[in-house]
Image (cartoon, rainbow, N blue to C red):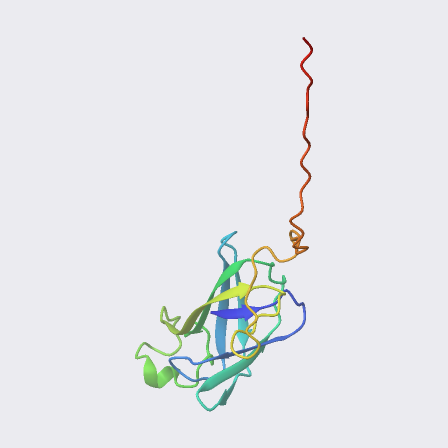
Length: 151
């Protein structure tokens, strides 16, 4: 799972895809609203086993929402992939129906600092929602009511 923020600035993503390429398309579907947004990436960089790219989300991601991330190569657009002619045997000037998924994952959006590997910071669902009392004062007041019997 990838954890991103609600920032309107560029966010960096690093993934290990099925196929390495510098140009591909991205779709992000909000699980709460089922709205899908599409992006085109033209300058991804391979570093070791990772494919690194930057993405600015418009509209910005919503706090505490889950998203489905899909990276794919759509052969319907000419020059999306330089190996179009080699990988797909339809006539090159016709529209193709082939789409190759190169990566799928989930995104969770939060502005909390989540770093379980180094600082052991875990996501807190109700962070800032309520306050706890840590006074450890267990004194209590007992009121006795004594009634006199009148004979």
